[in-house]
Length: 201
Image (cartoon, rainbow, N blue to C red; front, top):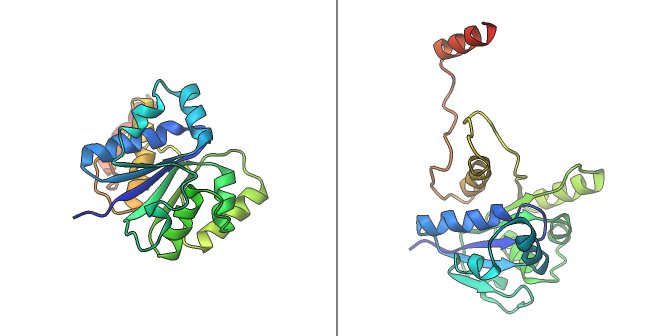
């Protein structure tokens, strides 16, 4: 039986990454345990047409961010890892410094101490040195820093294609199989020549 995946949605712009990730995981039959911060709930109203109840319905288990006694707050509760999508710099800072003031950060800290995959989809730009130092510190503790940066080699045709590519990269880090985007398999020299000639003409 597959272990559950913890998904946290915090208050950075880009809550759709977390929402769509839950939808994808539900379709894959992957059990999810969800934590939504208060700021994320507000962004949900601003950025999407989803309600908080809509998002909660996509998860198997939902926790209050203030519930430090929740199952995911203990290392003895086994999970396959945790993804924070999106991850605010405030959350990144708390994780990097083990300042476990809420359940999102406590669950992330537990994930690190148990040597499980922790993926932080940090959403901020531009970045100053303090932000970069926090990323480095979190990475030193074992976190995978995965800002949702779009790729274009798979020739996305919609915003959702771009979102799915970032989600797919995050799922790769926790070992979940998916077909959310076309993977790079090397270039075809003949096709590259044809494309070069097309551009030249």
